[in-house]
Image 1 (cartoon, helix red, strand yellow):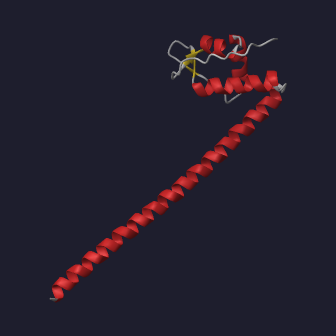
Image 2 (image 1 turned 180 degrees about the vertical axis):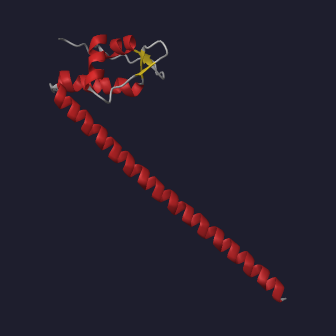
Image 3 (image 1 turned 90 degrees about the horizontal axis):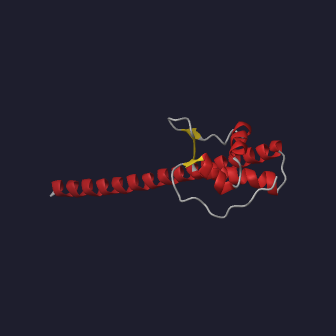
Amino acid sequence: MKVEKRNKAPAKRLFYRIGEVSKVTGLEDYILRYWESEFKALAPLKNKAGQRIYTQEDVDLILKIRELLYKDKYTIAGAKKEIARKISRKRTVKTQIDNQLAFELENDEAIAIRETLETVKQELNDILNLLRV
């Protein structure tokens, strides 16, 4: 099966229908539906009418799966492992970034509290000096 590479990305929107994703990726609708059953990470939402609605993240994942299967010649099982590994690594990096930001925020808060305490201390010393006069 020959898959065309599409260069034209859809206009940036919140959601895309399966036909739009099919055109952008060069994959048939039935392949997209099959991949949904094989790759847990690929789980588009459905609207009230039951139509699949894909996010940009879903489209990016589909393009990655297509690359793994058709260009890099992975098997479905191999592609699943690779996608799971990348998602796990992405989560680890996100957790590390979140932890670093939390540490920096705590550090910034500690500095702000210390500065406030120094200001209060100075004001109390000023009041004490006024009372001594």
